Image (cartoon, rainbow, N blue to C red; front, side, top):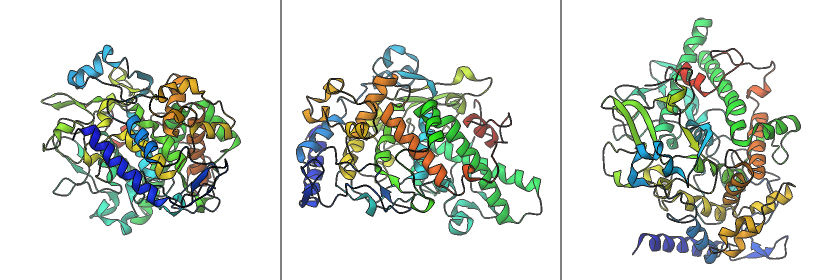
Length: 515
């Protein structure tokens, strides 16, 4: 059987399973039948540690085999969302030859590391381990395995007492970090499995390097706390170091990451007026499924290849595809998949963020648009949390719309009184499934509006509203965030007091610049 036919067969099987779940129905707001097992009312009584809804709107479509087949077609390799990168040209050419980027343009306003910082943030606030891809699920009955705050629980786990495997046995105030030879690495078991608070932070080399940098940054903060007050007990040192690092990390989210993704004007508006659609109290900070869908816009930002470092490949730079399925049986693959330790697998951060004196090193992200880099359509199973197909990331994102039965992009835009894309602006969807031009899967809609309204440099109106609402809402609902401090917080770990970004954090950790 051909690969495309096999995937379609799997997805139709998923569709039939979905239909068996939703055989009972009731009348929806628009008069059509809706699945009884899927809550479409919102999350009025959402609870901490669960998923929920921001909008009281009907799903974008019924979970029929025809709809799921259309989602599979839309997300397939070689399909509408595939940027058709010339993988055969090799990882160096994909970075340096502008003619290879005509269908997958660069976003010169974003450094390449923003993709992986966004992935790290996602892993810090949300982890769905129970819902089934493509099977309608009530989000209020689905646990979120992460605390829905930016509190670095993906790094700290349950602390030295609850997660002792993450900590230095000789000094439990410090996090455990190891070396792959030249530079830092995650602590690992003999089979290569990372010993970290969230296994997804070893999905690729760059996210693993970012996690390792956080380990080092915490340990540097421990040293600073002890130097400032040698009388503190070990648990007091740990808590203060964690507070210092977490607040600086939250500062980066609010002052560097979010303005680049959503736009400074949108962020300032939400900070001034408060979130419009997401105002949880600290004890019911549920994770909205609309946000979980929209935030996957970061997948459009990923490059097909990267320069991981400058000295790892026989003293020269290590260039690699993000993922290459042909490398799955190698012990030291030449792509950037995670779960591997070797001398060349470390990050030279000046490619990913702008450091003083190394500005020429940095490479850009790809734009937020309806084209995803081709390696994302054939993921290694080790890069998928469940370890199961489908291996097209776009297909997985689209089937997640069925899982959560989210509203269409148009319905949310109308509810939020934001500009609505016209059917003509979405006409490329008509050959796949004509109803999608008027009721578009939210993820595709958000990519398209970013492309149309902002040229792919940042999110469009719906995406910016949802992402800003949730980020600010989570920071304001967390009683331990710097926004809740008794005194105004100003960062102190960077080169300039009162300023702090990712380059400062990596420099503080001791990993910044070219290497």
